[in-house]
Image 1 (cartoon, protein in one colour):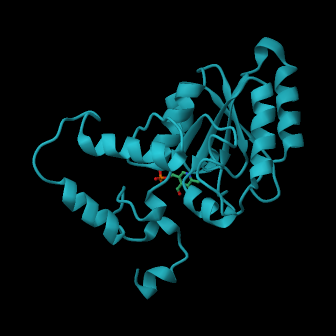
Image 2: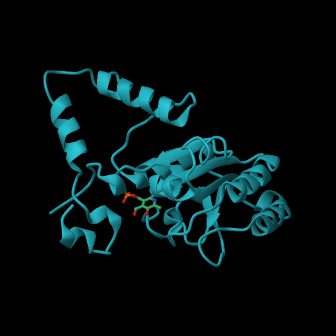
Length: 219
Ligand SMILES: Cc1ncc(COP(=O)(O)O)c(C=O)c1O
């Protein structure tokens, strides 16, 4: 990485593709391969994800974090339902309505927080308020959290477990926007499993763009 890029604080997705990713793309870009996820590279990716996360997994590579979030949330939420998230969440502020579009009408219910990390008490209040309005309400069916958050803060593992436990008690599905999960894992010094399924999440959008992968970059 050049000095000019290292000192550019615009966003971590302005950086170029890292040399290891470029070399890996060159390695697989030979001969023909089956389409629609039936190719050896996708199989290798799935095996690697299972190994790194120490768990069985369905892996769906997509080009952007917005696509990953929208597809995951639409799989977990009915069109008449709702997703509870922090008010700073990327899904609520920076995805041009894509999650709502893919959910075919489901709402986002943002919760205020001081630094991008919602409290269990606030989640509890939102769930209780949501229950109290009968058929008129879009029932909250999914909890979506972000780790690291949009503020650059990091939830502790206990904090995450508290939130997902309350969500499970309310019968919600749980989704983690991990556009910057690698940074959180490094900051917490934990295993990828600790901050994903062991912390109570059913689904993970695992980001590569902000860690040197090739995605929708233009020059
Ligand atoms: C927390 C978070 N989630 C999702 C995304 C979406 O990623 P993309 O720009 O690849 O759609 C971003 C991008 O900045 C992000 O910061």
